[in-house]
Image 1 (tube, one colour):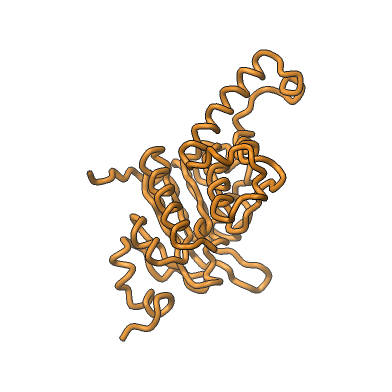
Image 2 (tube, helix red, strand yellow):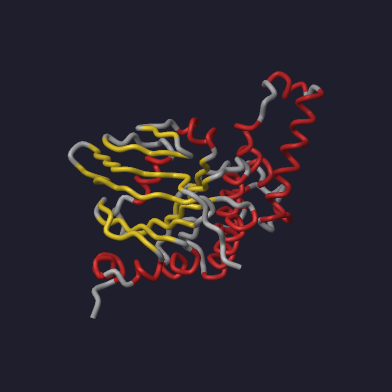
Length: 260
C-alpha cells in the first residue's frame, strides 16, 4: 500500500546563519510534508546539524523564517518548539547515564506533566493517577523499542546501540508530530543499523510521526527516505526524491564521489 503524504507541516524559508565571519547556512529553503521521512544529507561541515539547530531553537538564524503548521517564526526557543510538538535526538548522546532506561524515557514526558512538584512529591491523588498514566505510555514505548529486558538497567551499562534506542524512546515520549533525528545510526554496526531503520520506519508508519533525518549512510537514506535535501558548504545543491538526488551531477561531485 502506498504511503499517503500530507500537506506541508514544516516550511523553512531563506535561512542564513553565520558565526562571526563564518557562514554556516546560506539562503536555505525546503519543506517537510506530514507523514514523510525527509532526509538531510551532505559532507561533514555542510551545515546539516546547524539546520536542525535552527529548526528546534538552539540557534537563531540572522535571516529567514520557519513555519510550523502555518505559524511563521523568525526564531523559536527550544521549550516553545518542544511544546508545539517538535522532538529531537542529538548526534552525541545526552542521556542520564546513572538513571534507568525507564526513568530516562520518563524524562521525555516532563512537558506533559501537569501536577505541581509538591503534589508529585506527596503523591496526592491526581498526581499519582497522572504518574501512572505517563508510566503506561513509557512502558508502551519500551515494548515498541524491544528493550523490556533493560527497563530497570542504568543506561550507562548498556551497549551503544541500545543507548541510541533509549534516546529515540525519550524523544518519542514527547509524542512529537515532527521528530528530528541527528545521525541516529552513527557508530552502529550493520545489525544495529538495520534495527534502527526498522524503528524509524515503524515510528513513521505506526505512530504517523513525520521524520526529518540526518544520516551519512547513503544506503539507509535511499532506502527509507521519501525526499532528500542535499547541503554542501552551507548551500542547498539538491532536493527531491532519492532517485533524482542520486543522479544529480552536482550531488555526485560533492558527496557521492566524482562521476565517471
